[in-house]
Image (cartoon, rainbow, N blue to C red):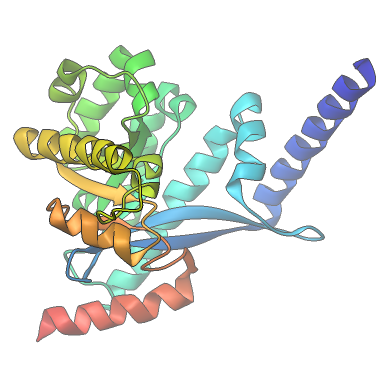
Length: 281
């Protein structure tokens, strides 16, 4: 047992050291996953971090984000993601490759929000690259909103006042009250993919009650969003059937492998160029 604990601790220390080197050596890369409208138009792009490890290959975030959270490395990593996303937006805007209605979503951790300089960093980066806050959506978790409500609301209010939008990611998995959602300066809810997975068109051979329950939960979140004037995005959409059910429930925005996996910037540029051409016609 103690040997296992020592091995785990050693692995985490190695991972932390490698993360520090990766930041210095430029081993990280941004990928972007599209969010689309019900009629297939590009609505937004979520920035996702990929680690191009020198001998492990591409390392997905779920393999290192936990260590980054525990060691505090999540703060410099989060700053890197924010700055490089804004830098990428600026480059695309300079070449008129991005339509003005496409927004960019960036995940923000609790530790980042708790950092005293978080707001200053956001404002400084936006000013340096001359990117309007209206193009950005900062995604926070529902649990962050509950556990860090005073800090979160102060930061959220300050940044929403300058034009940023905040989104509650994985909505429906936490215990936030309606008052929390109503009072916080939130502009978007993202329905957790666990609620989307079991959405099916009605089939006599399937468990009708289970289908109805899933649809009812998703419909309740959509209704809440509509009542509060919030945009609602369904994430984790993987099948045409799930898409059809969501459209029947009047869900306007979706994200998932059905539409596209996360793609590197050069592949995303092709999508953006098509959208920009449509917008200019």
